[in-house]
Each structure stands twice: as C-alpha cells, then as structure tokens.
Image (cartoon, rainbow, N blue to C red; front, side, top):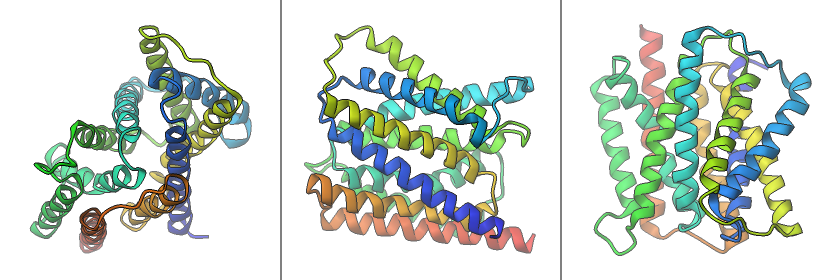
Length: 289
C-alpha cells in the first residue's frame, strides 16, 4: 500500500478507537468520579503499552532536549484536553461533542498561520470562517441548549490543536511508542493527584470491563494518532478524521438513543465540508509551490 493509503487507514483506525473509548467512558454514567476514572484508565493503558512495546515499537528515553520540551507541551495539552472533553462528554450527547471536535483541522490550519507563520490564502481563511460559523450552529450560543459544557468542548479543541501542532514539531527520531507511553503516564499522573481531593467510588465488574475496554481503545487511539502524523501527505490523510463523526452518530444512537437535531447536523456538515476544502487547498498550494 502507498504511504497515503496507510495514513488514511491509520486515521480511520484512530478515530474509531477514540470514539469507542468515549462511548465506554460515557457508559459509566458518572458512577466513577472523573479523576479516578482517568487514573484507572491511564494505569491500564500504561501497562498495556509497556507489554506491547516489543511488538509495536521501541521505547527510548535518550531524546534531544528540544524533543523533551515539545513532548512536555504535548503532554500538558493532552491532559487538559482529556479533562475538558470528558467533563463535557458526561453532560452532552456523544455526537454533539464529536461534531464540535471536527473543527480541529480548521483550528490547526489557523494556528499554523498565526503561530508558525505558514502561508494561508484568502480561500482557506474564508473556509475557516465559514467552518467556525458551522460550530456556532452546533453550540448555539445564546440559545437554551448552550451551556458551560459547550465552552468546555471548545477549550478541548484548543488543547487538541496545541497537541497536534506539537506532534508535527517532534523530530523523526522520536519513537511513537515513547510518545504514546508518556501521554498515558501524564494523564494518569495528573488524574491520580487530582483524585486525592475526592473519595474514590467502588468499581463493579461491569464498570471494570468498561474502564478496561476504554484503556485498550485509547491506547490504539494514541498510537494511531501519532503514527498518522508521520505517514503520507497530511492534506490527503486529514479528511479521514471526519469518520469519527460517523462513528459518534452511530454509537450515540445505538448505545444512548441520541440523535442530533437539524441545526447540529447542518453545522456538522458545514464544518466537515469546509475542513475538507481547506485541506484540499492546502494540498493544491503545496503542489503548486
């Protein structure tokens, strides 16, 4: 298979893993406090990564100082994204939360222009503006459905944008498994410290199965999302990120009986369409350059 085909499959796998992870965590229905939940998932994920590192890729701690700084920034962004996203996930329909997250490719393009000084033409800037209008249809500011959890998802988008830009900044010498393990350990450590402030809840067999399943899927999501940034052309691969919305719509309906309203579906369509156009234009500019 070509690098682009491999990258597309990795992106589809990453989005599927993250969405199944989200579904299992949401299915705990608040029976386990958030920080305890993140700690338990992180602990299981870390053990799985160490157990599978021999097959999936090596882990090394001998990294340049600059890469450690980038990994540190990426880890902080991942911890913050996990907190804000999951806090919103327990209070909003799965598809609505996922739909807002689909603005990430647009936010990454905008951040690349503002922070990395990458050239972004008026067509892509216009598409970004339209895409953010689509987000407004989803979060409905000023409407009855708008609340603090919508803001939490938007903060999670900002954190994921920082995470993705940090991943791009890593040197090719950094093993993906090292970044995957550090990500899991960072979320586990931060959640473990935060969990000390609240009593822990008992974990039943059913809850343990949900947490264990989410750990397996989030490990796959971490690994595939790192690998995908290093395979093929980003402009070709990135649109496959939107398969996560299809998974969220399907699982939200099957598991929780949720289906987004017309405005949310229209907004999600606008976000996806403008995101694909932005990535298409990015590819055209690179080819012409």
